[in-house]
Length: 187
Image (cartoon, rainbow, N blue to C red; front, side):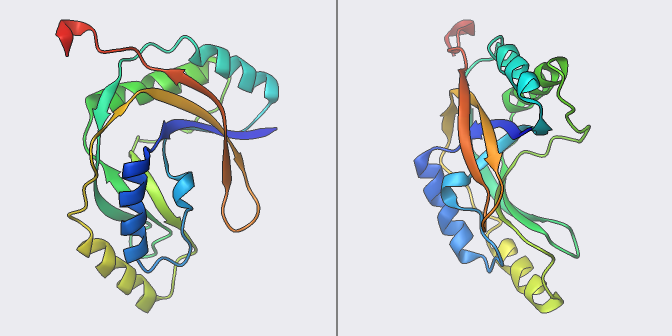
């Protein structure tokens, strides 16, 4: 079985901006900056044959390149935070791309959880901290609410294998799928 996911890589300048924000947060455990990404579909532990079928399906992906940027910080877990993240500016092309990727993965035989797509880049994952630490973290996240990244052009989608173990997961790129140039009306 191969633990994998489909997502979008973060360019170096945005990764650097995220690393600064991450540094300013009192996170109990941080995601390594080289592991920053935006997940489109988490596939989980899948059979190598299903992964190959998913790869073949993703080769048929038809979507245009588009601009994307990040904005704001937040926490998952409300009163008991368990992850800190940077938000993604609203993007119809991103929402459409995610739906296409998820549909192709399902058609290939992957079991993708039925969840509302909440695009984000995870900065840290951790067990819920004690109340005082959680309050410090919430204040720091609120101070970072005005964070915004430079915009970048999303040019491809990537299939990664996730290696667990150690302090943080390691992600290995298995394949990438280029998006098409914008052709409609020259935009």
